[in-house]
Length: 300
Image (cartoon, rainbow, N blue to C red; front, side, top):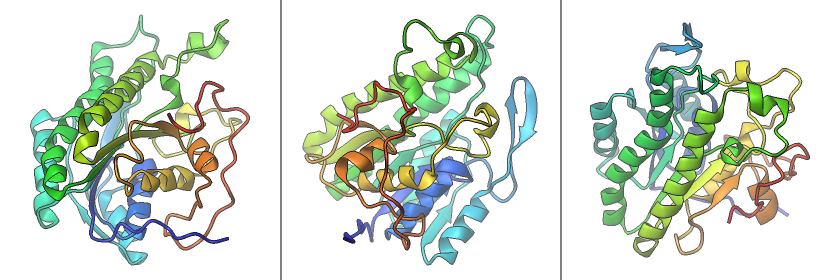
């Protein structure tokens, strides 16, 4: 039986890291549901250079491409290039987004990320600092700037993109826990969970919802592909994008403070999942057998 897809027409959303991958998919789905989406990343009209393992590399994807995809599907989007590692640029971003979209901001999705795995004993301080900047400092700065706009509107929704890596490692430690070099990233994501839950408690009485949504397994994107073994089973980004949308329309009293995951959440809540353009109903979500057993399907 077909259900009614959430309608967020008239809402303005800001999505960080939206030049490709997960951020682009989220922007597409929110736009398909009616929102005016402000997309931001460093890559405006040309791919931006990044670094990993001490080497410079350039990943495909630009904001211009994201806007073109949204508009081709009948949606509305505005691109604002920005580097959230630059503190002043990060502080100014929300106001710029609100000004460009008519003076309001209803939805904030903190998705932008930086990944450069290394054992903690060997990790450079710059890598450690950049990891915290993306996953803790930027969500704090952007959320703090967005709250006044949401208060003025009488409602708001903040979704922080998490990771099952935030969950504690199992014992006895498997080999990948000893060698993967992802624990600074995992710690930052765990901090993001707790920051989000605290913000949810502080803001629920003002009808501002704050939730965390991460992949149930892994999603292949231009940025993450080299970190995912070729044989590892991954998931369709559309399930994550649909779950983000589900966190961007209900009153905070009904849905806030969750740490949820992309296949578990729609399966538990029996949500209908649609393609990124909102036109095609996808198969029902099924919890992957290989996802972390510590995940709570409800997100609570």
